[in-house]
Image (tube, rainbow, N blue to C red; front, side):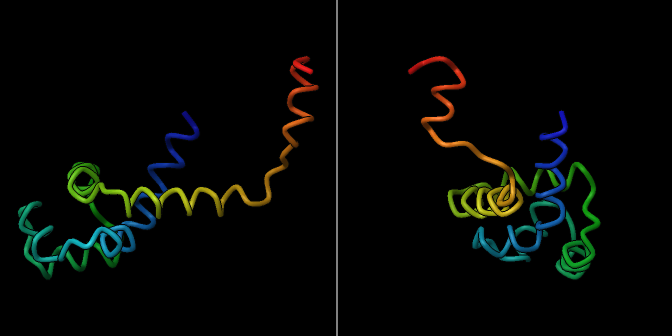
Length: 96
């Protein structure tokens, strides 16, 4: 559950960058959400989209570039996590 919340926060906190990476224009996305371009831009800058708007946006802008960007963000967040080698893992699991 905690990982799901982190993923949602990652999307919300980076929605502007995700929109830019997706290649979609603000006016197109605003129309899909039923918003004016000005209102859409304000929500994007303030990160004040509703849950329903975030869900719609995520569905519309989902592409390989967006997924790669999200993966890079996750990798940055985990950069300082402790890891073990392949050999250590096999030994830990008793597979050697």
